[in-house]
Length: 166
Image 1 (cartoon, rainbow, N blue to C red):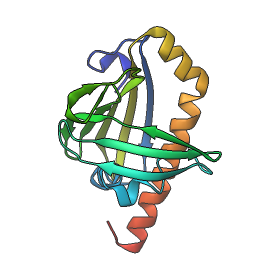
Image 2: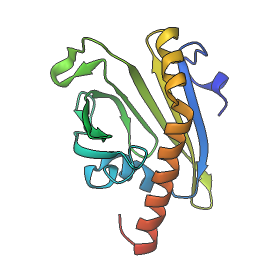
Image 3: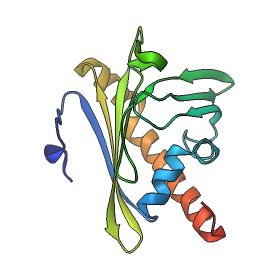
């Protein structure tokens, strides 16, 4: 899927990462929706996830805490759309109970499509509230950071497959 085919795509607001991942989409979805899995790959190493609360339903909590160079960073939000094995949409614009966040940063849209032979077409879109925020995220290293995370996700999923675990 090219960015111009994404519903609502806006080149000024959206950063897009597309990759074919060597793991089935149901396993990638499980890794995204299970705290015990997500903590292993969700932030670029050597940083880590120290807390994770996922209530995978519309309005459910999508909360993580990262340790970045010894500094704890909370990343709290809610799920806006959940389509098992196909799509996850979550945002930091709201917290539990639909309480507006004072400084929202982005909405993430994750698409998982079957690419055949146990592979997945993985698309991650970071949609921002302003062009300035999108430019800031790009300058922070969106493509490198999210690309590293997808590489870590793929390696983690392959390790689960090798162990026959989910």
